[in-house]
Length: 199
Image (cartoon, rainbow, N blue to C red; front, side):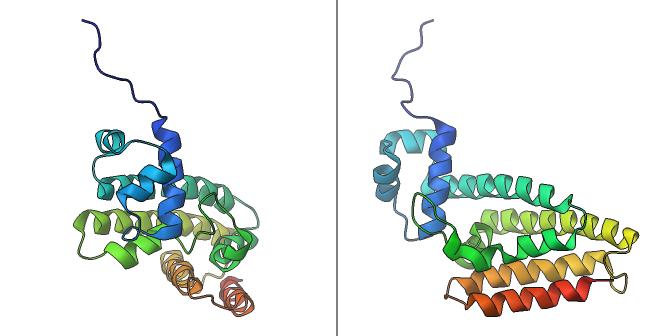
């Protein structure tokens, strides 16, 4: 039987990538469906038909954001020595003035922003960000365990606890950086944390 109906006139993956930038720069609540239609150049019906409602579209964008971030994170954590790579990961939120996107300058971490905006009243968002935070600490824990074995990182604390501390640091910095945190102060705090990890 011949297919009926009009084919989708847009690339789903490309549209989702552009939506990440929009949601990242503007947030969930202040981004309307009309904003998405206007910015992405896609008809409202096509967006609903492909992604569902705005909330599901947003959560898909968060998942894509994390997929990209995790690839970079994994590459960085495979570095030897580890501590310079960890410093790069942690300083990312403090260097937002150096990062530009099509939708303007993004603010903070999209996962952290989701936590601030949707958790805990949205159970699906809560489950998603909790899983992503666990993924971060699992990856960092493994890297720290390897670095402890080579003598680069102190063994005075469990790598699981060190990784949890780094999660709190990077997410706290991501949130505070949205209020125009002084970059010099932020970098000094990060260097203090990195120094504490040295063997």
